[in-house]
Image 1 (cartoon, rainbow, N blue to C red):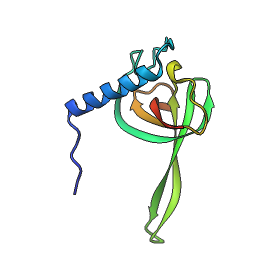
Image 2: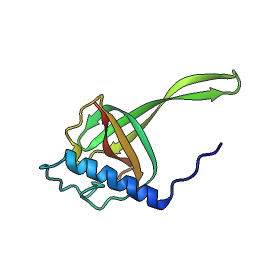
Image 3: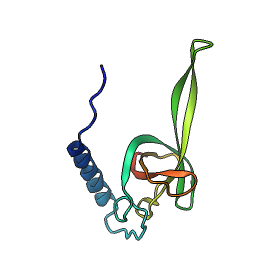
Amino acid sequence: MAEKKQSKKHKKVEEKKIKEVVAAATAGIECHDRKCPFHGSLRTRGRNFEGKIVKKTHKTVRVEWPRFKFFPKYERYAKTRSRVQAHLPDCLSGIEVGTQVKISECRPISKTKHFVVIGLVKK
């Protein structure tokens, strides 16, 4: 059966919960990043994913997650991975490589970055 789309009210409640969790985790940390979804002016929209950080550079992380792709010719599934570049706000800069994070789609930040890290799932 097809899943129902989330209502706007439900999305706003979910965003509030995420903001509260991040606010509690970043208490005492100053964030002056304009591209931060919690302290800046960046708005999130669209898709949300969970994945593992495989590479970290200045204000950017590469997040990947496994998936299965079907090849009709062979009638088999192959294990593949999806990778995206995501912006890492100043308030979450303590995140290390190998950490599970939640990312959300946003406006294009650069040529390759269209996602932003919005929270930790687990270490």
